[in-house]
Image 1: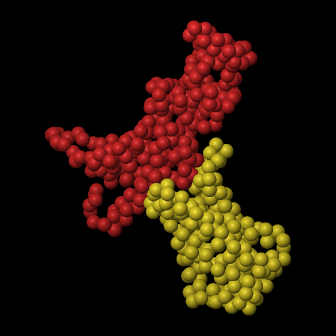
Image 2 (image 1 turned 120 degrees about the horizontal axis):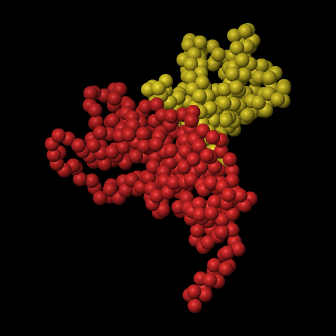
Length: 201
Length: 266
């Protein structure tokens, strides 16, 4: 990993936005059909689940980039020594939370894939009832709420770092403005995600 | 009259002491321990004058004689970086750390990002090695007189002067969560130095070499954007702007290198 480190880290930054961030946004928007009733959600979920070449799409757009981002991200998270007690600044907290939410998301997404996609492969139907059953357990509601908020935060804050990492926002002013834009993105995506969760409850 | 005033002031401050809690370490391998000192207060004293007082009379707060504390210092005006240490939890220069502005007990620790030599003395050689790695100089040597280089616009010179204030003190590395024994990250100061030398009209003739060095393991990409460096820097160097600027330069350079022709510099 020595000389290719720069390329791997840039790839890690890029994959977080394209395709993972785009997929997250699309996933939360499709979920939002649940607020329009059982029928609307099942139609949308059937459409997504029966796309042509769905397995290819899943592996290329989701699993491979997500696994790289997750495992390389764990390496990045565990080689940092957070020091928010020394510097309690906004950015230093964001740095810390980015790593905390990242590690939590590896656990949450592994569980989420087991509970939905792998159950589908084992013969279960992914539909409104499946999610309603999952959310019959109050612990699962809490777990999924934390999962969705972690994901939207990690994406929005990661988008901010992406802009710095690729040299798009350089000046303190542009970085400050993109902080506000990303806060907005975090709020909007969180509301969309949480509305979908509570539609199943 | 003036003599009386001095005498009065000395009497008023004679009873006052300043408490120091200092993390000590006898050798690079031995484990650290804390020792407390009560130093007689003098007006306008800084951390270094207190350390000098302890050196003059090395007795700890329990009244036991101990070895004098080892620390490094040189310029005493915050331009050399030698006296950097962690004061009340934050890395900074001890020469400009005024006792009147610090809460007591004043804690002093070495900057543990670097190997500790003894007490507050650390070995900052890793930074000087990194400066060599990123070629932080303007090469002008040749086998014949190369003549004058291109002129630098005055406005640019004034801007570059701010970046040149870096004294390689190590405070930004100590503040950075990504500079530690688990990573090879060279740290914010070094990235800013590449920006300084790549902005120099003659230095720019070798800018691809410096960018190549920044794109190695432990380089630019290991920045995690916690932005502690720009908060910690005693010289107010815009380190995070430098990092983002080098990120852009590295993006452009890597695209050119991959998709472009066989040009080296441009």
